[in-house]
Length: 341
Image 1 (cartoon, one colour):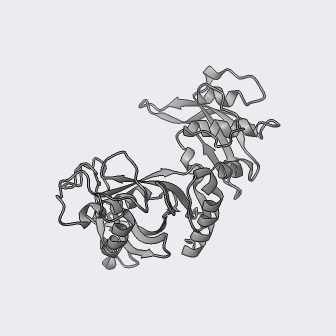
Image 2: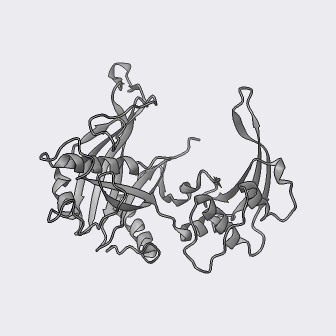
Image 3: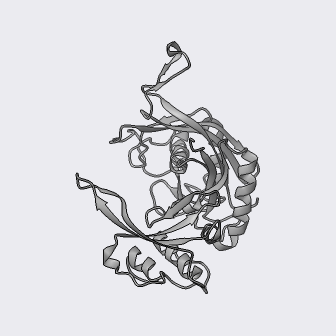
């Protein structure tokens, strides 16, 4: 039985920069030049010009005259379908995203109706919402997640490039004088606790990898798993995963992660003594609540913060908004972002 596409969303904290500078600016009062228009004013002015705008290829902030070298066999492609001010502080987007070269032919029931896709992108529709703060240097972006794809970075590059191009009186080769939006995935410790406790709960896993004949690593040959956590070990497990993410728990009472490699950290939580030099990786395994097993490794931690909504058919825009705003309200105190939802 074919697996169904899973839909959800991700949350990002946005920072606002002047061109390629590292300094951040206020989303409401920030200006590019003294006595110039604020970001909010200029952003609202360019929204109408975004609709129907298509970009294909690598977008480099350092070179506005070239799409940049693309070493892969596919190129990202995006088209804004709708950019609508929904409220005074929220802008809703609908856009298509795909990659040119990812498919060569779209087949129909009759071969004569097949469509060549050379130099065209096979795309899907995504929804996103930008929540501007009442003041301050952080905003929140909600972007739909479809399967394993959440094209937040490319949407922000599209918006930033549009800001660069919007004022025709400015030098097109300038490196400042335009707004650049940068995103960082939001770490939701509440969501982390949810996934570690849902279903049958979390398991601890140590893995030993072999290698293929060509020298490449293959999937685990040996796995040592302890199902269920030892009593009272949830704080340590939470600290472990946050350590893999490179972030700290905002709770001042939270404990820190044990030192060492991922193998050493996981082994420290297992009830039996193991020889850590016999394993290559440590992992945390959990049941997603729908009978599927998910694995958290140091390089896959961001997948924790995909908030699931539906399978098989995309959720309504209103369903994404209601679920996202519920999460945002719970995070505003920790993030110290004032958003009206």
